[in-house]
Amino acid sequence: MGKTYERIDGRLRTFIEAQPLFFTATAPLSPDGTINLSPKGISGSFAVLDERTVAYLDFAGSNAETIAHLRENGRITLMWCAFQGPPNIVRVHGHGEPVFRDDPRFKELLAHFPGVDPTPHGLRAVIVVTAELVRDTCGYAVPFMSYDEDRDLHAKRFAREDDTSLNTYFTKKEHIATSLDGLPGLPLPLPPTTV
Image (cartoon, rainbow, N blue to C red; front, top):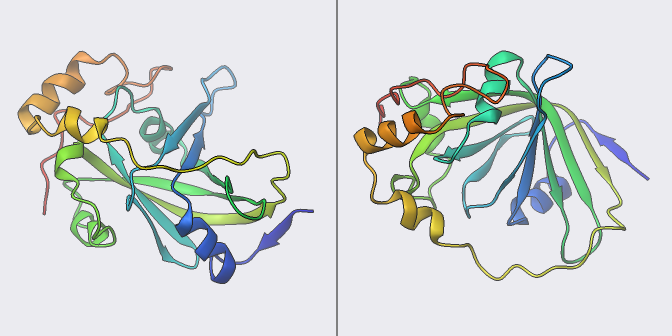
């Protein structure tokens, strides 16, 4: 029932861009390491850059496992599920890289997200993923669920922060600068924005 695709275009791209939620999965190289699975869903924070490259905005949170794993080995899988309409699951397996705020590419990448004001969310990086394998499967067991709206709690929580207070917040969190398994996470102090 599954099918492999050479690129992210046509029906696949339309499906991916229409989903209000996706998941990221990463893991360290250590066989004893902690596998990470994260939901992502702030409207407008995901973009298809070309037929083999996607990106999403990485916002402030209480850990930085995805960043740590990508810095160590780059392996990542993104997954979208159809909770409405015809059943479908799409996975993009690939190589990811966190592009931090002081990277010369940051400003150009940020232009791919015109519908999002990253300021109130404490933007940490843009995660860029190059697809190595693109597959879809049936999704017959995925339930129907309705999307009502984005929660406004993230923006409300981080809108009151500036770089200085974000650095303080990140420094106090146990798994921001270092992952659960002791890998380097988010560079601190937070790199300045080049925008």
